[in-house]
Image 1 (cartoon, helix red, strand yellow):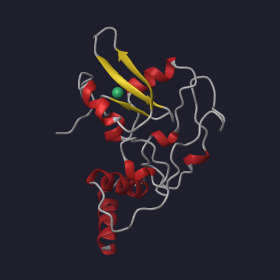
Image 2 (cartoon, rainbow, N blue to C red):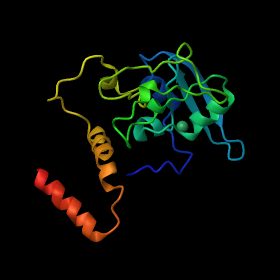
Image 3 (cartoon, protein in one colour):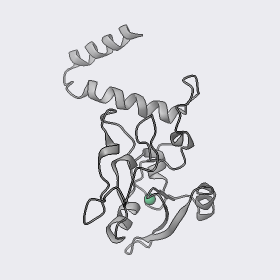
Length: 181
Ligand SMILES: [Zn+2]
């Protein structure tokens, strides 16, 4: 079943969230509550600025959730960095050289640095992805999760489909891709 994250009540238990962050260095665990509905979520903020929410949107989609941004609005100097978003558009985008921002200003290098410098791009979007934190590249024969395959292929395909508008163009692209195989 595909979770579109429309239902704000969906979340993992706090017990499971604590299980997930075991081994990570947590600075804060926040309770983010929607006042009109009473729905609440727990958000773990790691010492390196990354986060993990019990809605699991960031770890699944690679996009920070609304609960993170609620905290980002209120917490002074809570960093947001492009590396928190799983790369989709341009795999060559040099996010490492882009400063992080808090609500009021860009953070200097002494205030925030990309948590993990990886050879697969800045992939700080999922603190649970331990393969992203290696300083040496994994073997090319390593099996990768289906979700990672999907996102990496999407990153490459996205620029190819950006100008396509007609059925003929779709067919040309499909033919071109078929010839590559
Ligand atoms: Zn969340």
